[in-house]
Image (cartoon, rainbow, N blue to C red):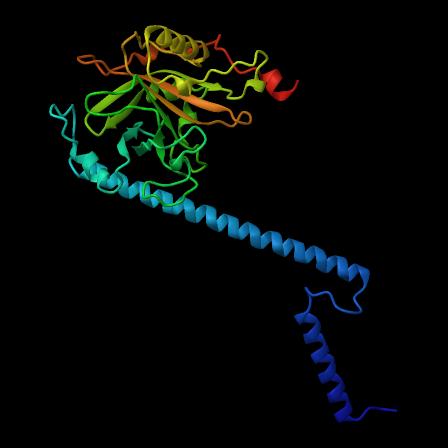
Length: 323
């Protein structure tokens, strides 16, 4: 029996409504779904959840990167434009104008570190109430806001004032993927040409400007179980020296250095050590050590005669990788 026109229209309308209903529930498991449809919807739900989580993570990452970049840029502009060409030392303990501008924002400010031609161009802070296991600026920015990139900071045991300065300034910074903070530091890794183009670390305290000539760079482990003899070169604990402590520091640094420079060094010199995470293995560190330019010394470095250290002491790779 043929359907009437009204019945056909009603049937088509009902079918269309059913199709719309099914489209609305393409992600929802419903009564009557086959096993294949159920599995398909579950997988679709999982994929959607993963996609949403990934978008959120990427959004947070790029947002944090943007905020960090904007903050650093504003601080660089402030530090560079307060007074241009600040050089030397304030003889009466007066804070340099550049530093004063930063101190008004953050009283933990102790200086500024810069390596020409890299992204290392940041304020340095020091928080004396830190501990070996709790470093405030590891996850806080210069303004005190929580931030994954943190801030370049000095070891809490450091003395850095007008009249007294620790023998070795140990600075820590994250190895950020966008090359901010100390993300550019590993460009020195096994790269003699990069060293030749960038042999100087500039560090200004609140009271003076100074240049430091790089003498060494190396990868090292931090856990006793990562070496056959259970020993760790705890470079971060070499802050103030007597002569024996100095000799131990220099011996360990130079035996590990990937490069041999022409820069000399002696007991009584001041040093700066830049430390960041490395990617060779868990808890590895990449370290750059530089010696402060002495009074009256030429800041120039004979980089052409620098060479790769073929006998550098390396981490125990077989032990670390369980080979």
